[in-house]
Image (cartoon, rainbow, N blue to C red; front, top):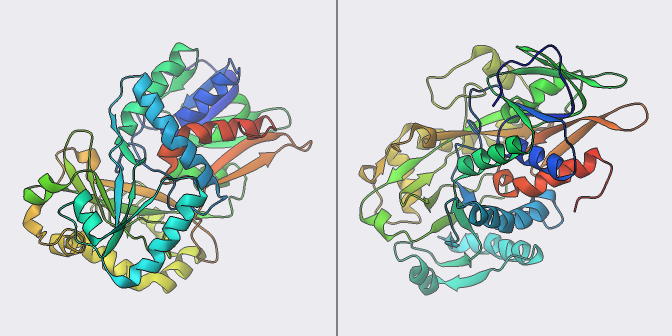
Length: 417
């Protein structure tokens, strides 16, 4: 990791953002033969936001609309993530996942999951109530699905390994250096940071919670606003936790891209439940105490957010209740794990695991962007100068390695491999 570089160093490509997607892009650039590449991260360490604050699930590709980027890249990434972990002796477990339908009215939605999963090439087994109990004895359900390819890993460790390998291959990584904009000029791009400029032939902005801000500051209209949704986690302890074998998910609400409160046994053996989904009071608002008035005001006055809130305010109130009340969260968990009480839920011992903030892109009409979203700022001759990654929440960590190749192929005007 480098310190402050000399005046305006020049690189072939500069990547903005040190999460797993940024490091995957850096890796793909090196694989494609680029020899002068750099990555800039505003925090003092990598993977400090969405990458390091999530459920660490290796998603199978079950949920996503066939033909979407999420479907194609998550299915590929599921296999590649496990292969990468095995090659580099990083922790992972292919434990499988049970999706539990707790009422009859969820069965049509579950049938749609089966259709999507099989269309995406995902192995899916349909279970009756007894089949669910056989897989997960603590779970109560009228029916369910078992998806064997789903797993767990440590995305922070994967990101660190990608960074180590990239630096060994000649990449430059700057941490503690905030990017303000990436301004396209006739023959290059100026990456303006709080510690001096960088010059690049091309730039990829993978800035997560700050992606739309950087786009606008660069003179590029992203067409969306990033709305930060916080998801909080609790450790589940006691007999209920002991009985969890792998991953237990509800049937998701199709109106939202959130997958609902689920139970996950991590690679360290602990079991956590969550997340909920509440509006964060700042872009990096990991608790109710973190408030940035200007950022919150920007969200609350945004036409897209106002339209979303007008349609989904009841849902939002329920999520706030689960955030503010351990008993309300326990009640949500008990739909799948009967008998769960507030006394079974505890703050995770690792502060990084207590909450994450999802960078969710919202359109001006209030609709949520459901797929990955890449937008390109091109030169007059049509060459891409800056590629903005404007929506890459879950399953982006799972799909990161294929996302990296997809982005580099776009930069080079090719079809992704």
